[in-house]
Image (cartoon, rainbow, N blue to C red; front, side, top):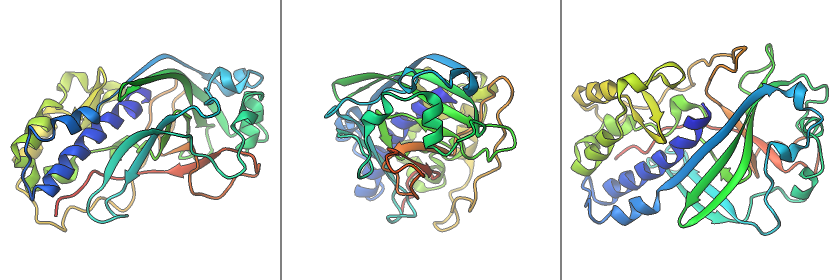
Amino acid sequence: MVLRDYDTIPYGMQLTVLANAARDGNGQIDAKAIQQALTDATMNIEVSDIKTGQTADIASSPFTDFVSVPQPDQEVILLDVLRPDGSGPYGSITAKWGQPQKEPGADLNSLTGITMQQFLEKMGDTNGTLYSWYIACTVNVSYKGRRVNYKAMYLFPAPGEDQEMQQHLDMFLQGTRYSQFAYAFRPDRILRSKWRDIPAMHDWLAAHAMPDDKCTGANAGSMCCVNGLCGLRKSDFDRRMKIPIKPLGTDAPPATPPAVQSPGPQGAVRPLSQRYELGAPTAPLTNSNAALRPRRMQSEMPMPS
């Protein structure tokens, strides 16, 4: 789950380049003309040192042992995502380096001297019973000639709690993230449209089709990620390419996402449907100095008109 959550980002960024080119070219793509844009949309993300455990075991540990906090004036990577249903028929995901997003009055420095238990209390987990286990990791991101190495973590609710309240704490790769993998940067709409037959689009999608034998276990599903590369499972890609193209207006995504599984005792993988991020436009937490806000995300990639 952790690897897929990060690996889908560059997949979505490059698919955005292709979708925008198809839109601007009225259903045609100049493969040579978009090479630089595809290069600019390349983000290398390496995730390592993955650890999991019970939150009770790290309650007295410093928060910054698990989540890196940007230094004053340190730039981070800001993701900008537009959903197809929120700004017209075309969605997109782009990234840029910039100053961290934060709520007015929020003080990131207040996070550098607190324990994990104190941080959980900031999130409303006053009894230490809401989040029962975690996954922590080290993330190394290279984008546009710059690199940043930092710590991030996921928090998972206890059994019996709302399992959609999973949290992803990452202060160096900020902005909307499609954490629910069933909806994460999928080319479903493109594969139901005439865009799928554009040579540059077809070649890119085919090159990102993953071997079926690699899409097993926690990586099962029609989409999977292998060694940092994401895409449709090869057999699923071939099957979809044989399905007749549907008329526009018949390919709307489901109104609600499919049911998700509860985390298992050994840290079983399930998709995220929420993460904490700086500056997310939702109701504030009880602590006025909290720099993090929850947000739920789900969507598909752009749909041609």
